[in-house]
Length: 113
Image (cartoon, rainbow, N blue to C red; front, side, top):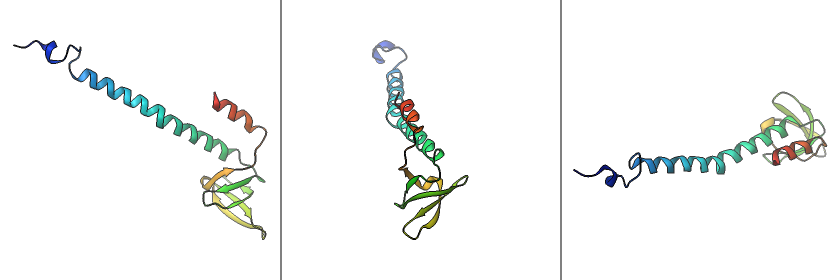
């Protein structure tokens, strides 16, 4: 009969022990490189959308630029162009808020830490 430690290479737990360690290591690396930064971006976007106020200048995901006239629960009315055309968008269609409020600096400092 053969020695069991000779077959497994001397690793406790058999040949699967090293494989499990590599899989766990890959999951941890995947979390820190992909999942965590994505959640951080989602949190920043959520905070930006919740902090919008009438009068803020915004850009939509379609490239429409204008000023917020009215904010409802999940909709935003934007005034754009020389004719002051009013367009209604979903809040999730807002890509960037160009207006910076003084109280937003606190959020940026907290997230950098």
